[in-house]
Length: 191
Image 1 (cartoon, helix red, strand yellow):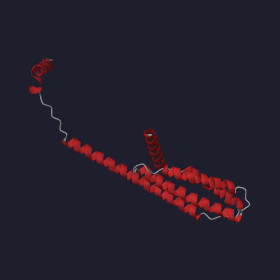
Image 2 (image 1 turned 180 degrees about the vertical axis):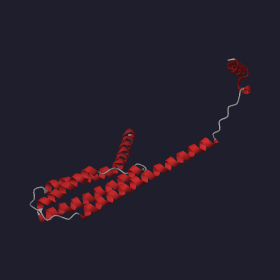
Image 3 (image 1 turned 120 degrees about the vertical axis):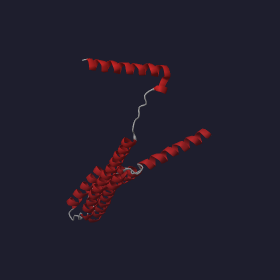
Image 4 (image 1 turned 180 degrees about the horizontal axis):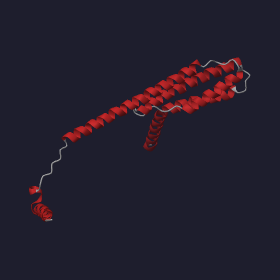
């Protein structure tokens, strides 16, 4: 017990002396503490860069998979045969309408993010479905002009046309509207 208590007393005396010394003389006589950041900062940079590269690789994989899916959707839409039967034609028009509304057009002015690229790809499949919808609507009009649902499908087509424009260019429309309001206010307050 003698050695442990002597060691403990010596440690307390040493630390008390440091406290008094630091209090009287400030940091001039303090024990320097060195932190070696050289290897740890290089390791942190390496891990950060590795994580960044892994995230970029993952984003590319998602983008490639989305591109593959969208291309398959477009190919299926374009290869779909035009039905000869009136009921089948109406059924396909309804299916395309559901597909378009499920995809919906999204604005792609987000500053070049990966989400923007995915939105552009999804817009392509919605565009292809919209073109096929209009093509089949023309076919319905030409083959069965007395069909009562033609006017309803025309309204849907018109609505989708506006939805497409505002979905894709919503940000630009909002900016134009904002500057139009600012310009109007400037002219009104000037008078």
